[in-house]
Image (cartoon, rainbow, N blue to C red; front, side, top):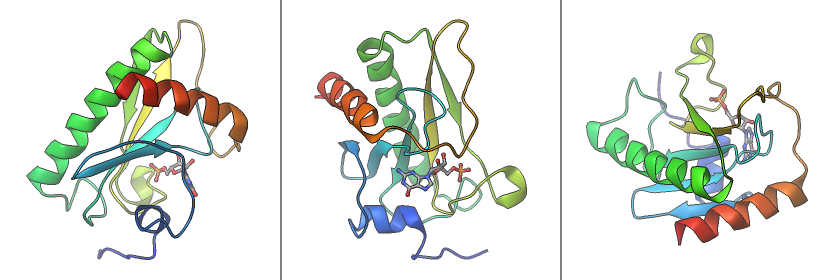
Length: 138
Ligand code: 5GP
């Protein structure tokens, strides 16, 4: 399996399509998922190409997980979350739909289930939540 630089997250990285960015450093970018399964659902990706965990370098994994930890702690504080679910899928049969490594950060609240995948979020609400996450990350 080879990396296709026309995947949607590669286009987001190159700013060819819009995204709601909440954090970036030299090695990673975090932006809001537009089909959020929970309030604050966001995605952490490396800035360099790899499909998923199976072909990522240790340096890419380290950078992505360090940012995932940072964003998860920010979400706990900014959104008063009770917990965080971290998801990461590999290849189609493993549940992956976009073939640029990404980690899902899903804030969780007691008694609140994840919403089904694929439901478009309210972009105004996503923007408001992104503002809170950015403030906690700054
Ligand atoms: P996967 O199943 O590959 O782990 O998940 C891909 C994720 O990307 C899904 O949660 C989906 O909602 C999200 N997604 C798909 N297309 C877009 C897009 O154009 N922009 C953003 N921000 N997220 C997307």
